[in-house]
Length: 259
Ligand SMILES: [Zn+2]
Ligand SMILES: [Zn+2]
Image (tube, rainbow, N blue to C red; front, top):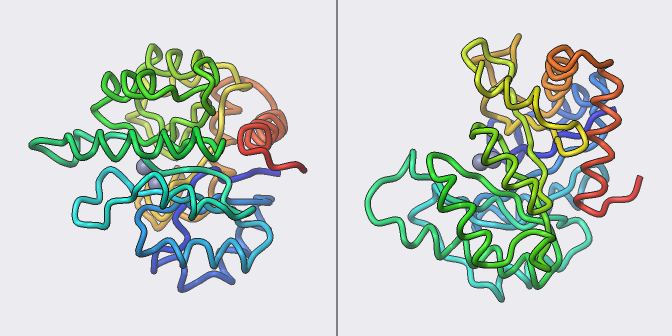
């Protein structure tokens, strides 16, 4: 039994084939998925999916890559998060890889999400790419993480170094691995996954992107998270059931979702 901790099934290529997606989840023993919000205009659709399907959870937030989109306020995020199916704030964070120039607006948007997380006590879903130093610095400044009286969260689709993973874990965060870890070219990331304790790990698809081996290059979907778990089990030399059980328990602890 697996949980996909991060997917975008509201995106058109997946939303158009929901019955298929759900059947594939059931076939691969993926019991739940967290549909992650990327901007405010799409949020009603994300929430509708979570309300329609008991095994779909949702988050509210505005992605750091979305430049020309309504800017959320703390109050707005707090208000939109006030629903039992909204279990997290995000995805938020910093991305210096995709965007260039003065990205102060990205850092401000990130701070807004951390404040909303502290108020709602709902965990953060953090996206960080080529920006780990600023990400960790702003997390500390805004009091993200359990050690600062804030709420923990997850560093999603993790591709950073072991040092960054450890800094996040020290703040009470979890590290989530996507299909990227299954890629032949991902030696360094595999070394990070090998070092980290399963007790701090989540698994995800980030679908429709980044399908794991053996579906690399195809449209990804939540059912495929089983392949991420199988890869991690082999890498760590443990039974896949152990990866399934531990990552599911971690998801439930982090997002306060009882079995
Ligand atoms: Zn992301
Ligand atoms: Zn995402």
